[in-house]
Image (cartoon, rainbow, N blue to C red; front, side, top):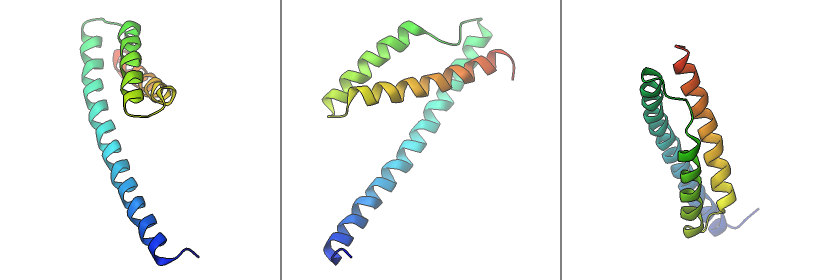
Length: 98
């Protein structure tokens, strides 16, 4: 069993991780609220659910931000691609009136 100092430090770090996870969930919720509005706007004006040129620009931007933040740019791109695929799915549903 770890000593009490190590246990206290582990608990402190885990609490910080829990707080960060909560913040990430709230930020994602806000992001999806905005993308739902984008989906509605696109559907109203007959625009396609995806915008590949914007997505490419965002990937480039996020990869640079990740590198500057000492986060693996590959991971940042995978995360963004996952989120965008879900957003596009939502936009397609909105366009179908669901």
